[in-house]
Length: 171
Image (cartoon, rainbow, N blue to C red):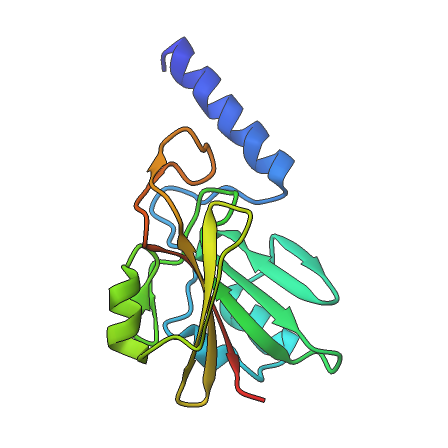
């Protein structure tokens, strides 16, 4: 093994231990829920049984880095919201949320869910767009400009594409 490769592996191990996440072994697949919306209403125990041990946790949320999923809990420790996202660990949710995936265009969202009920500009590099679709509320972050790769967390991305999808049930 070359010295450069040894330094790379050491740096990777330091980064994953610093972030509090465990490295995925070669050939190991991250556990990802097929339909994040099915987690809504589940208990903390049921979520952890499906997705494994969370990488970050407190009484109100669990983050599952390899899955690219953040789960928010209510006061009864039931799932109130699930976010499919790109996490600082570098992992992303690779499935679709009610027909839309991270990286899809805003037009794909409209085709799947109809017209948005709210569009809110933010002071960040993305806008927040909300849809009501069937029994769900979808809160979507959409990139407001192209990413040139200088952002180490997100790299390259296109204006008007989905950054994050959070799904909850309508009240």
